[in-house]
Image (cartoon, rainbow over all chains, first blue to last red):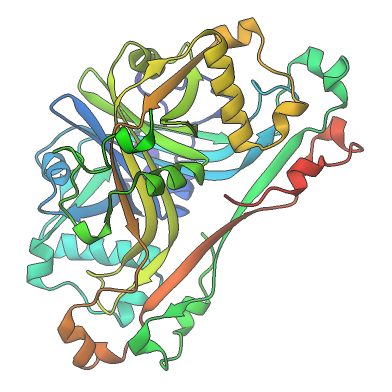
Length: 224
Length: 224
């Protein structure tokens, strides 16, 4: 299905952004770029009326987001059985220091996807798991061992369609109350943003790999 | 209440860690240290059977975790009305590259708190909001404008008690399947971890603050 045939972010009643609508994004490409820059998401599932929020590794594959967990996990078996879910990715890019505490905020890119996940099986599951590994560790699938039948059995691999979602991006300067910009003492207070920068550090070999050269694909990794 | 009188992490049926129990932590001090190193959390709330997961800024105050949102938010009014919630913090510390994709994982510190949040009002709310600001932006409350009555009215400030929670820390080397450590070709594959390192970048002044010196308290910020 072509991207343009899919519903725009924020186009349903429950994904329409009411708070700070100037931060709402309706371009599907921005949503995909956020997912492509993310290593993890937080997934919500409700069991007996209690919401649970769990971190998962994630990757986009076409118009779906892939994540996986243990076949022994009650939360994952609930999701596999069709429990409605919410998958949220938040990339924190910085702190925004306004002249008031109330207007202070953060720079971020976030996406919230609502829906029901689809259980992947067979070659489709293997393809998704390799895509997930390649997203997190580009190049790694060329030399690490691929999953066995037993390992696949211990894994629930899910795909959540990117149909219903809301996307927000906050990247501007502080949005101060007009009076704070003209009246002392606040008009003279420093305001702006402090970026948050993440990178990969130096790889640490385990004992057995101590004398194995670090693979070149790892040396090429840059923070997404 | 002394910390030692409170229930240990993982001590209830729904917070007991079944998967990878070797990563489970029962020390309350570790839970507090994770919250103290976090700038944000993901909060779950269920509305009409649909879970929603939203990012929030957060801070620990004694034996509670503080977060806030808009009085106009349906999710926050649900939480304020006593909806059960789950607040999860995940600090991603690195990628763990095992010799198999299945055993590959991440270094992380995570905490999941279950419960019902308490609505803060009056001086208690102001104290909590200042604690939240000081946690995120140490020193800032000394010069930024504090909330007005109108701003407080637009804010729902919540405290979630740190009574029921589960804590997991993954920080070890890859835990490879024994056969992958001895049989070629996997026994010869590089394995280990790649750290993720976050820092604050150079502060960016807004237009009006272009000639105002960056406050010394900001210069002293280090990634928590």
